Length: 148
Image (cartoon, rainbow, N blue to C red):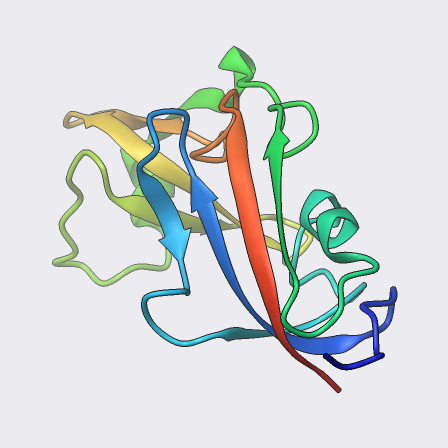
């Protein structure tokens, strides 16, 4: 085993899995190919980076993360009405929208944010701007493949 350990600014390759309370995979790189992450760059949420700190190549660690530790609690005020005019702004004329679609919007500051379309009619649509895992405890499991 390598003597290198994961530190706050480490560049590393890892396999990881996020599972839901029912055991279903939300993300699983163990079945595909490893991910590459620069710690502290914002690529991974701080709660996941905290689990990785101190690991060595080949080591594996799991942690059950509460909603408060991971994606936060669901906030009902993040379910919002968007007018059809605002929804179509800057999009192709023939674009179609269906419940379940994840739609990106531009904020006045230039930032982008996304919401899940809940329902739509000729006047507008209801969107849920919560993270899909908000309010859910998740299990995070990771194994370090390489530290560079």
